[in-house]
Length: 255
Image 1 (cartoon, one colour):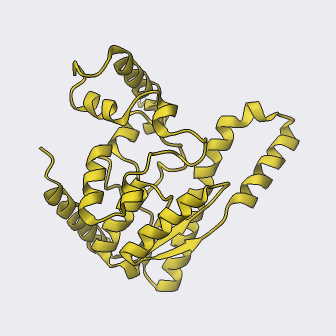
Image 2 (image 1 turned 180 degrees about the horizontal axis):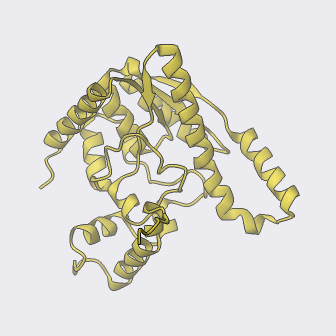
């Protein structure tokens, strides 16, 4: 049975202990308007104080609704929300790629989707370095991926998988929602249909399975309540994305 009060308090203590151990000061968090970043920001604001949390809204052909939700989270927890528009950077990037390689849009769909989180992560680390200098204390970048996303490899290498501290890697989507409800993340954010804000599809449409099914397979691979078709898709996603967690490294063999 998931004890939301216990887990929430443990996460907050985990953050505080980590910051104390390494003499850190603050956090720079990408605020997308979705539940994962909203709950992460809320927990860090509670652990460190909102004055030590900076949220970065990084639109890139994004929906106005996402900004409204990002602002709701920042206003609710009292941390600063900065706006860094990546639209022009992205457009110029794609323009140069197309002109230099003479490729059409059909061959750039996945590349275009994945460059956005990579641009965003570069921006977060830029802000973290800048604030570390200004504030005379180290700012780091928390991750926002949950256990279900990580299990099926639903993230971009060099993008949203890059972070300095992870607090949701062992929490399923439903558990993240429970923590969000417990700390008071606005309903429109915590119960928003999850999507990447990049492809125009929901997460579950892209994956072809439900997050609840992924959670069930993680807990019990033989669960009879999950269809064989969904189990097979989840297992295939898990296996085919294992390379995202391991960098193949040649080692000299001593003879």
